[in-house]
Image 1 (cartoon, rainbow, N blue to C red):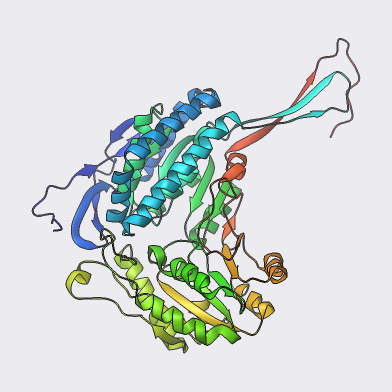
Image 2: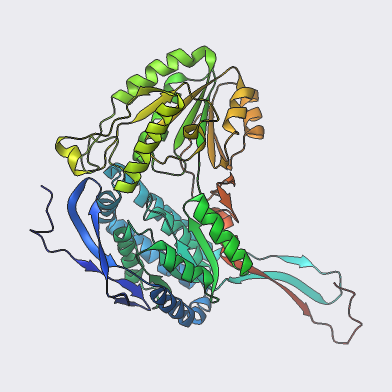
Length: 502
């Protein structure tokens, strides 16, 4: 039975600055409750201020020289210890994610595994951060490149993957020798505290990783404006990300922003329909649609449209909605009242625009549903590309379905949005699959697979309004979190006339 704040003492969690767990200079905290049980308070967290942000920056500055001068293989050993600790605490971490963010426990366990994969990959880069040598056009000269860290880096992360997304930024940033200020989303600070504990236990020196919780606007602005912060890695909305990128560019900072998505699956008539249905339902309604790579649109070749819709509605109707802690739950609550309000507003907009509500669409209430933020998995048909539900990111369990006469029209519909993160086609026709790959406007494309996710050793990111700056993950992460230095060594015995370099 869910406990209430009246019957159970509520723990207060602190910021982590300079190797110490400290209270905010504001002297204030705020509560975090469970999306599945609004009466269950998970803890009180620090309401940080710009002064706290600057204190964290100062701690990161003080730690930079020591961490940057630590050999990369030695930095890797800290990450390997964090990997071992995360494995040992994986159930605790997964349960924290589900309690705080709401996703089904199986999805939370998958998120923890993803974070572990990222840390393992980044640790391996401690022996692989390659520069290169190249012949010089001058005699008796060696020319080569080396990498060095950016310096102090701000890590600003969203609520929907409160451990995996921070890990895929923090691990490569740390292996490159940077020191960090970690600012998690204000509604998921509990997972951030747990992740920070992992790195603290792994032996990160004081000041290398600093955590500040609370409101994003004032604290985030302080980090962006600080001259000491040389890099910013952000995941969140397109509106906030473009503002950070513009301000960062004005201040000559290195910035990467992973932003919104409106991902489409194209289903061609020759596809394996059963395989496609499984991927589409998982992509649209898994994690309650609250991921940037979720399937938001399906574009179906017209000759299989009726058969597809009949089976899609039937499969969606079998999904079990409930508390993410229940083992049989397929679709868990939305993360917050704000997110519930947004999703319900879009469902209303879809009906007003003339789309057909083919399935779901209800705010679920009564019984256990009264304790959380639940909405039915929702399917709209008769959708046209100019509708708001076809253009804007909803970030919930809402799927819009289109009909297309052929691949060319389907790709045109897919490309008709401002986003370009992830996409997918289901087909047995290899030439058409390659035509799709070569014409669809998305940073990640899948053939006969869902739009979801990606592997940690490959770049992650999108085109158009979905991303700006260098990609995340893989070797791209090392490229972003380090600077390339070109070195020329003249070892000739005698002086010579300088070459006419630029």
